[in-house]
Length: 150
Length: 338
Image (cartoon, rainbow over all chains, first blue to last red):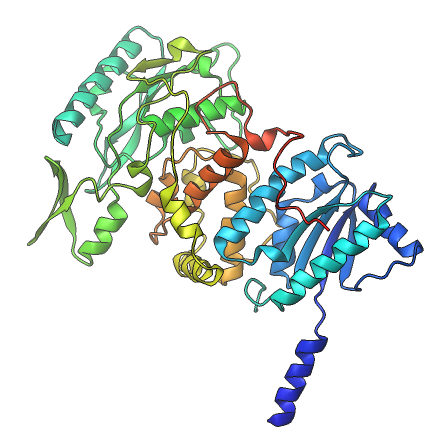
């Protein structure tokens, strides 16, 4: 019994969240690349999906991600006005605003879903934001509320 | 004025307008409500001849949003020789709003639609009454003065009218269809000019102030009985996709189990789709076979688009709905910053 609690405690301490990250091809993906080649350290918690634009990310993806058991979802795109497709991220921003408010309204921790802007030149900012998002999700703990049990 | 006399007056005016429309051949058909086959119900009816106009009724059980009948899910072929079908449609406030919004989304042409506007006085929440009466069978329901009287085999019950109407009707500000600037002659009968709607959303704010855990348990409790029959989708005038996301099987967005995460993801995405489009008619809650109250989510959607994008659906035919539009200066306080 004692060993089990110890083990659980250990698990809690060493538990690292798994975060699904949708990065836009033109800015954030390149930003992540820059963070990599500049050897900036950030937590190895994200798994990257490269999308053509943050406007490509449908709320379905995010909800399905959480449902499939990811502890958090990140969507990152170009800064407003810098979109390769001119308005993709502006359209996406409206969607995200509504999704985030709805998640909060439904009582699902809104911290699990994070949206951010990071340009191709902002490797440092990208690393910092990933650090911050990981911290938020880690504080919330494993995703048990919304993930499918069977 | 008591509700009965009000209803009688509405009914007579509505029939008069419908009769004139059909006689003058301004419309081919009139869509309206008629008496249902069981008490507590009223069914939609399509009338093509002025002799049948007396079949049209109005009472406080006409919950169906008739705008649904103008947006076939699979577009029908229009006979080029006969031209477009001209339709007269009995419109309470929310039907009018739905029609305006559908024309904004280019689903219908308001030129072919004549709204027979009526000042709606609220729809009775029959789910709530049925729940409170329990297993007993209701044989008759009518309004007298400010009360709803329910009669059965060996019981009679009275409910206050103001209390037992739909939650959405209690806060409804658009009782009769809105006047539209571009199509002045499309609205006959009672129509109102709506510039803006003042609403303080006290009911939503109250729910929002709860702790996350309380919200979760409330929502979970409320939606748990959902069997996902999609009656809410069928009744909604805004759900007209040719292939609904629930019917897609490549990829399957959520599985067909009754687990809470599957149910919730349906309701979440449904809510996402209706943001800035929902006209708050309450048809979804009225048709739910297990009596789930979706009004709270509906109200929340209204609040989001009102506060964020200053938009009210189905009022102005010239304003772009928020999800079809974008703006550089949107608020972005929810974005993650360093």
